[in-house]
Amino acid sequence: MITEFRLPDLGEGLTEAEVVQWLVQPGDTVALNQTLAEVETAKAVVELPSPYEGTVASLHADAGETVAVGAPLIAFDVAGAEGESAPKAAETEETAEKAQPNLVGYGAAPSSGARPARRARRSAASAASAASESAADAAVIEAAPHDAVPPSAAEPATGERPRSTPPVRAYAKRRGVDLVLVAAEVGDRVITRSDVDAYADCVGAPEAEPKAVATEVSVPADVGAPARGERAQTRVPIKGVRKHTAQAMVQSAFTAPHVTTFHSVDVTATMELIDQLRADRSLAEHRIGPLVLVAKAVCLALGRNPSLNATWDETAGEIVHNHYVDLGIAAATERGLIVPIIRDAEQKSLTGMADALTQLTQTARAGKTSPAELAGGTFSITNIGVFGIDAGTPILPPGQSGILAVGAVRKQPWEHNGEIALRQIMTLSVSFDHRLVDGAEGARFLKDVSDLLEQPGRAMLF
Image 1 (cartoon, helix red, strand yellow):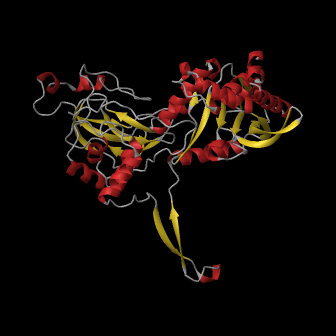
Image 2 (cartoon, one colour; image 1 turned 45 degrees about the horizontal axis):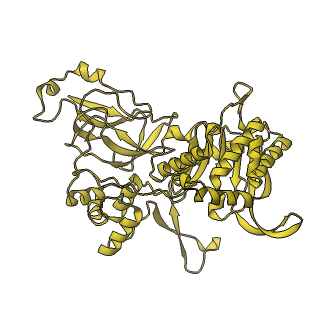
Image 3 (tube, helix red, strand yellow; image 1 turned 90 degrees about the horizontal axis):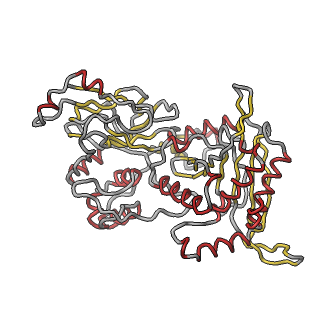
């Protein structure tokens, strides 16, 4: 029996998704919850699991095509392939209807006791052929708010796809590189973008082509065109995360009256504390850096300045005070800005905050951040210091009343104990919604954060 699977609501009311790449083809036999495809929503790249076990009858969308939620995506022969056991072959339409899962978010409702399985790895020739037929636009996350992700030491099972992230697989396709061959070179570790580049350089594969198409545009002489007569333009479709971010930022900028306050603080004591903590062998498994202490200081300061952790509810005509901190950490990626959330951040210890940031970074770099992990923040931090920037005027994420930009730590001449000394200085920039937060409240919050970073021992008083 042929049964269609329609694109489910992947969370947060998203209305469409783009097929990044198919991991199955017509005629393939799939198991329950086997990954069918990677799709990109306005917030994240997610893997779509199979709600059925059976044979793929047809694909209703090509790689790179945008599909609306509820539209047919793939068709299955749920009666099973030839040679299956009689109970599966005799499955009735009523039984199949009852097995239809509700895929709001992720996963499929169990309809079989069989263990999930992954499609057997195809030969190098067929994999290269498939790579030439489909295009993907997922990109490797180059910037994240914390340390790099350590490679996993797990060994792939025989017959599975080479171990790599979805963005790396997409990049390898654009370069015409077969990851099966790369895996033979790098061994049992996760394949990275640099591995793809190294293999491509070795075998002479062509450079990766950008997804956008460069269009030569002739400019009339009467508009001041240069003597060479033509100028090149590259047009990039506005979609995915970039489109969502643009809409959200415009909405926020023209809805909430923004005010930004700056303050430079001597963080020498904080940097010395970080050095001490890193030297402690009992804390070796925790990645404790400046952003961890800033996040902890923010949570403590929000407890004394709750208006910066509140929400303006225009529909209800109310100010909603949140008695918890869902802390957003902004991350700049090639796909656009994403802000993963650390839930109940105010309850975390310093090591707990460090572990949460590490996990957030690993998930973001792997391209696995789900829509649910990007929604519902109450306050955000953007770490512009990783780019060597001292200060900025960040725009509030919609629904939040405050965001803190953390600048770079620089050694500067500074007044200390009545003398000029070389100290480590950081500039903090807090933007807040002036409907909820008065200037004095914004200044008190920034001063509390600064005091905690200048004298970390003051946390004992909070």
